[in-house]
Length: 529
Image (cartoon, rainbow, N blue to C red; front, side):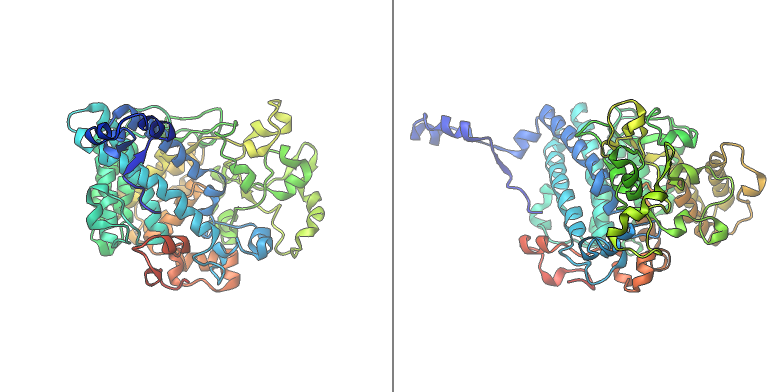
């Protein structure tokens, strides 16, 4: 994550053209081969083109490997057995086991860092160049607000994954440098970026571009997630932000519609990542999270096939009476998780013997245990009639910020502000939808619930509502429950017994330590090498 030089060379052709100019002319005239970032990004049209590219790069952090890197290693989702125990000597499974293989050289650790920093740096350049125009140029202000959102979002990702991180602010580069900053500084920047976005982003925007409501929702989450020691955690401010969202121009839709490719960008979507089934705009998530037994049965042309890189934990797929989370009648269970592996007269269970090469014991064989269902895309199936015939092309939109989530966050704030009875009402709105808007009275939460009971139950309700949508890691981090719950509910963490409290964050990648002159070995996170 080296800062790029603030001078950007235009190219060989421009250099060649300079050779035709005399030395005196060259000395007398400003350089034609170099432009400052202010000159490039300060042009609003150029900045907007850079923003469009930034949106695409940011979206791709929700696709394929990028998607499951941050889904695994929680009490909700874990590596499939082959990845956890066998592939690469169990290398991938270190994310779930938290053992000696989880080092600063681990591929997941390095990639999550390296794929985010260029986007943060690019955003920082645009923000710095447009800042002088914000008060006078409406178009510049809109671009600035959208870029601020992306930087704030990515920085929040980074600090919740790695703890202390550098802050890239070109206006204060001398003061900040590229060293890791304290958490108060980091979260101050995150909140500032999201506040700037909320105050300046448009009320409406094209699909795939943020609005002030997306900024308000993420700002509310930031106030809920900022570590208490920063003094920035503030449920009253979070409630104020989220209230504007839940009272905004959105409405709950049937749960069936949320991940249906026939109903993209519903009235519930506050921010939705846009994908389709054509490369490079597919996400390939099904390829990663589907069943290898289904692939053995129908090849890549079975729409629920895949390679088990991320599967539900037993806690997340089981019913309440079996120690899990699912209550009778909750339609979110079958919409979120696949339990049935029949396909056109075949059953993937019958194809498990063909996977004996994996060398897994019967108790670990999980290719026909429950799988993530939300990213299945029937358009890719051999029998869909669309001729795609490969689940690698899966490309349903991902409604990352949506109203059901906002309701639950808002309810959480109300509970923390000693307004538990109101909080219960908001949760019941979400739960009513989970029973297809016809919820039995016994499934409604009761207004007499205590504040502590609400705190505990809201986190499980968030898994029911948001299963597989990559919120769980950050919810565990912000509530301080990561170590306690992962070591008990993640199969591989529980079996290995090696998870430690410091595993709540990952190590700083060795590549960064070696390349960044302001980060050295003494800066490494506790417990890592």
